[in-house]
Amino acid sequence: MLTSVGVPIQSETEPCASDPTRPTLLCFSHLRWDFVFQRPQHLMSRFARTMSVVFWEEPVDVGARETPYLKVRQAENCPNVRIVTPHLPEGMDGERREAALRRLLDAHVSVCTRPLLAWYYTPMMLSFSRDIDASAVVYDCMDELSKFRFAPECLLDLEQELIGRADLVFTGGASLYEAKKNRHPNVHCFPSSVDREHFAKARRELPQPEDQAALKHPRLGFYGVIDERFDLDLLREMADMRPDWSFVMVGPVVKIGEEELPRAANIHYVGGKTYEQLPVYLSGWDVALMPFALNESTQFISPTKTPEYLSGAKPVVSTPIRDVVRTYGHLQGVHIAHEAEGFIRCCEKALEQSRDPDGDWLAEADLLLSATSWDTTQARMAGLIAEVLGERADQEAPALLVAAE
Image 1 (cartoon, rainbow, N blue to C red):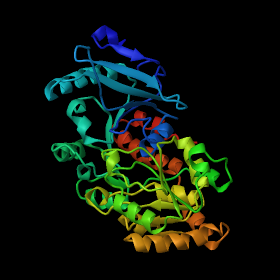
Image 2 (cartoon, rainbow, N blue to C red):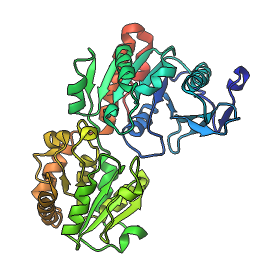
Image 3 (cartoon, one colour):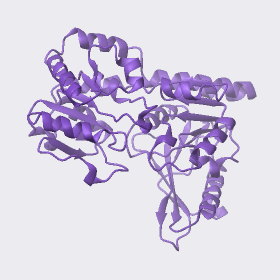
């Protein structure tokens, strides 16, 4: 056990999978497993069907006099996903933190089954993990993190190192692919997909949650993280222009202050909700919104919300995010607007469509969505990983070639 090498553990489960026949996927993520269910959770829960997944989160600070330790727990409803959270004494300087993380990681990896696949969502975790003995390294670039608020200065240098070490680079959209394709010989574009069956629940009349049930129609909604990517001024102007509309904002507020949020009688912030709850809220809306700001932080984003909203039979109004325009902008049910007046006009068109759920606009969207799924995305990724492993050792490839069911 890890405690025998001086690594304290708070564990609700075994440190690593007990099945010696399963390879290990060690996923380094800047997003916590329980924060918002999105690309990392969709992919890791599917890889867990054939692999033991270790989801390594950002550290949590504890008392200054405590000993560094790991908390290991099993992900709810994902029996082969184990969430590992380092706990470090507050006040540690950078070098001591890196050393502590390296020691915790090395001990944890020592009991993981092989082959071991290292999967990165953030280059920042390379600083303490670069020396692990991985059979393959994957960089799944879902965002251009260097463009986000408070991005560390060293992020770009670490990303360049990670790209140099990676066997495969995946990107979360076409714009990111174009930005990375010349930086590595094995880059593949995998736009985030959709669980159509889950969000199609919103096509039925579902019992409405208490914090939305009393809001008057028309309801125009957004779900997701509310941060520097969100156009607060656009929301403020729309609410002012149409006081008879209810604007429902579902999601946590991150990296911006609550005082920055526009306040009006018809803007309703209902907080973060679970993945299971999202179709319930979506079912009560008339139009789905994507009011993203056009700034550095949104230059390369490829929002997963578009196919989710459409799967729930809600017409979408978005600002001209490049990957939204190029992938969905030709659909009748997706409207693109630059400013508040244009957004209002598009919302009015979308409201007309929402009254005609059997119209051509939805049939067209369904046809496009039928070609995508998270199962297909994960299976294609697994095939590429198996090719890499197969080039190095033929016996390592078969376990990863098992198709997701």
